[in-house]
Length: 578
Image 1 (cartoon, rainbow, N blue to C red):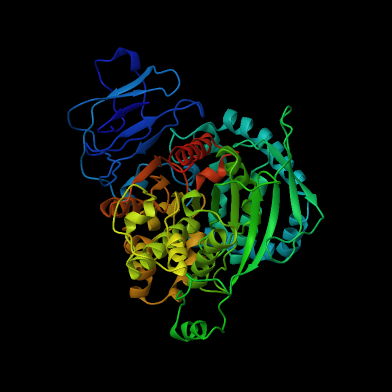
Image 2: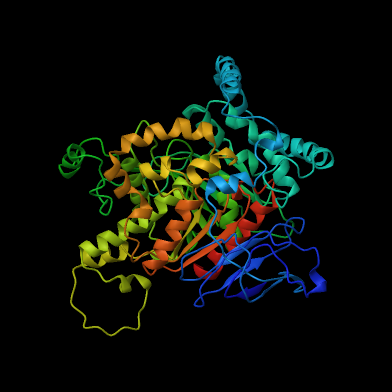
């Protein structure tokens, strides 16, 4: 890896014979007070690269090619020179212009917006709907190891055939890996079928199928059900799953996954005031009404005899419409192992359309308070990781803590764990001390393609959210058509702007790590979040990939770019939070 003040676009220095024919797949720029590096690592086939930007300046990925100066790019393992380039920055292309440079629709003369095409697939969808519930139930009831093996064997047969017959001709750009091209060929067709909330929920509930123990990140243990039914810390009972070591030579007992159910009614403090209307707020103030105070989810304890000091607080994604903690167990458990065997807490939060966005936020804030007040984890030992909408909730959690501190006139400096200051000490009540401790910032937040802008403008005006859905494998036209209608329930335009994390104050937030693709639907709002957080004094490390879809790290079983992103996030947690 070679650090530089400026990171170049895809050009090469003509006076360097050693790098003739090399191409850079990722580019960005930074001002002199921070570093930007382009990284190529052991994953992939040599074309996959990504950008790491630690600057405090606005983040950019230029597409121009003129200017002066040069940048050397080196291999992260061998140190050999891969590329020398001269940067140049012209007008940034619009999302629509970028699409014109990409290979859309698998390179086929197929228009997904054609009325005849949509009619055909709508008819197929209606036919499938007649028996989809039975198919979902049948597949869902299959043993998880069997589903994982079927997925793995299917990929092992399909991918070599695709590489041989189609190569790099179906993805949006030749610089994406062979694996990503193969995955694009399979997942592209989902955009042609109408998407329903039920289909989204079933798909995300099966996320665990993509993460068998042998898939990257590699799991050191495997799940086995235990029928001891014990409760947890006063919560109601709910079975446990024991995880046993797979590697020979490790004699420690396997980890335990505990099902959590705990009523926070008598001790909930910081979630008070989160309500979507005055009537619900009045009911909450009176101690009644429809505000749930029960925290539910799963707690993965790596060492059954003793919880770890550090905890990874994991929030799943699904556009507030789908997702669940159980489907995220395997990938979250692997992250915990790779982050020095820390425990992982995966709380549930309520979803649209049955509930409101405010219910989701309240559940997350209560779950964080449960971790600190009930389980006794120090805030400085908590790292929050959010996927898509879960990333938006991580930011809103941090903002809620910062807003409560400002309401109570608590200095943000006191949340950075500095014990060397010598201010005059004013006696405080025990309750005040405990509340200040509760409002202390966590160690940091990891945001995986966070969904943070719910404004009407973001959802309707030209930009990545309206243009890149034409090739994003996850957030496609069908998902947007189904999902946007529910965000109208958040409120009018002013409410939607006020409740969007990217449009609220970011002052006082802990360090953030954000991974995003330049070609995913949420790129514009992620760039805006990085820029506004840095402007508000937040330390942000940004990892940017090209040609990937939304939340591509969850596809790490299949694509090397996903494995790169997993390494990026795990390494950041180790360097900054543990």
